[in-house]
Image 1 (cartoon, one colour):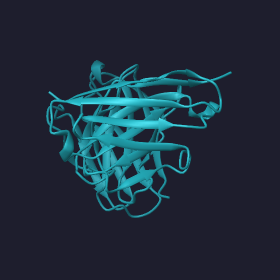
Image 2: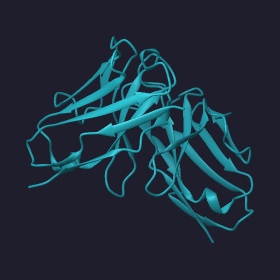
Image 3: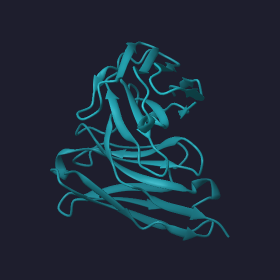
Length: 108
Length: 121
């Protein structure tokens, strides 16, 4: 099974900061990588699909990059409404469809 | 507007059974694969099962294989998860999620609000 390792597991940043979250796959997954945002008590929301494509309606301060085994989610200017846990997810090899462990983003 | 509404969760004893349902609306249900994803209290997301649009392809996580059965009724725009031989470690919020493709398991793009399953004596 493909393992997805996210780092850091949590971070604290100030409003306006640039925030970077990384996700590493245990083997090459090409660009079969999605990013989700989950706010407390809510369902996950798709942010980025196929590593770098912004889902419709998602603010442009979110971006994704990478291919192969190393991927990055970037928030260019952190906003208070971005407080959430972020998950990466691979779908190169099913089953299983696997998620990273999550990165909790807080405001400093 | 895509809407997914789960139901059927609740408290069940270890070894018991439960059937979850997901009512879909706002899209052509029969054209999309569907997924179940769960989240144990305070934990991350765990994929459970996927089914293709015509039920041709079905996949399960090893942790539920042989105990859970996914199915769908395209005429009723509904997705189901039959859960048998439930264990304490199955306690979680179960999300129904539409897949962006007709084949099983790629990009869950719309999610329901979830239904809580608690397994305890």
